[in-house]
Image (tube, rainbow, N blue to C red; front, side, top):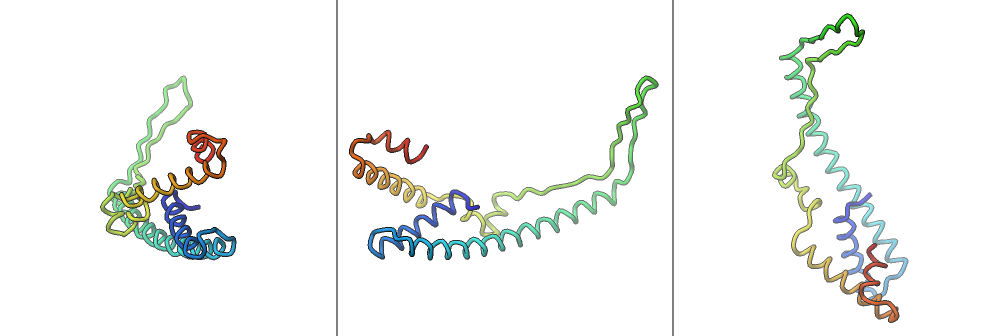
Length: 151
């Protein structure tokens, strides 16, 4: 499944390709574009998998260090009226969450976040799409076109 940003970028590429063909969207070019996009997605997923694997290895190293330094278990004895036991393990599991800088250094920032050019293109494409929809359906108002397309 693609993120919104990936879908948007694929849409922009698709729109550029189809506008060069005849300014009309035909099914054949759409299928070819989707095949290209699927290949790109696989490459991106492999890069993300490699990045995640390195984070997991780092996580395992920290977990091993913590486990080796703290191996005691503490048990709280229940009162005579209760047979429940609570125990606390000395083992700790650590999950590292990458910082923004780590995403940028791994060159994943461009895949995750929009930049100002993306937002401008997205805004202009939405305006064009709504305008074209209203022109094709003159009985529908601009506000209703927005609701029908985006809600």
